[in-house]
Amino acid sequence: MFSYVPRSDRPSARYSLIRLPRRTTRRLTEADGFSLIELLVVILIIGVLAGIAIPSFLSQTTKAVNTQAKELARTAETVAETIATANDGSYATVSKAELHSNEPNLLVTPSKREAYLSAVTSTPTSYSVTATATDGDELTISKSATGTVTRTCVSPVSKTGCSGGATSTW
Image 1 (cartoon, helix red, strand yellow):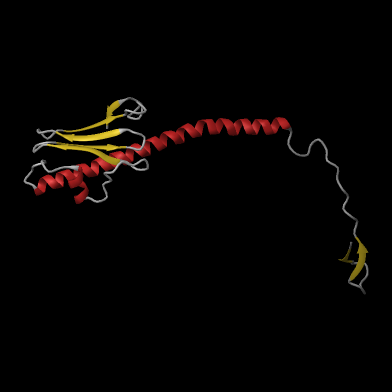
Image 2 (cartoon, rainbow, N blue to C red; image 1 turned 180 degrees about the vertical axis):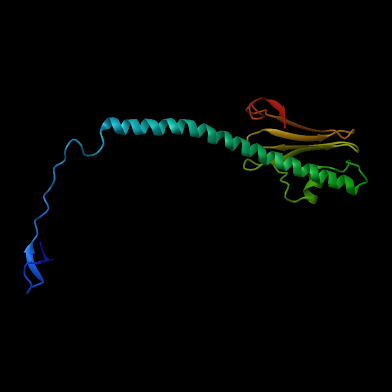
């Protein structure tokens, strides 16, 4: 390989053709690359981190599923109160069909992909709405004749979805 390199000792010719040495091939020594032990240690560290992170992500998914059902039950509660306001304080007409007609975003048909409103019961002075999450947890908001609102969660499938137990409040 030839290249022009400036030569300061010849003022008449600024550049002259000189031969540059070829690159020599370097042999690999023990210090090059990673050893098997180093690679195994890195894989072990990655495995430990994955073992910690994956269960944490899975619990967040369960929380998200239950939060979707809670939001649905809370929306149904608001619509039930709206229906009662339009009917002089009577909850007698509160039903799945009536809730869905007043709020079309309420999903009332069973679904494996989204929470849905699974049960609605009402009397002239009380009502109860139940939303079922995709994991089977049932979240219920009930209003009694005295005006007391209760929120319950039942986990009939996994028995651990509602705050770690089969039943709880929220």
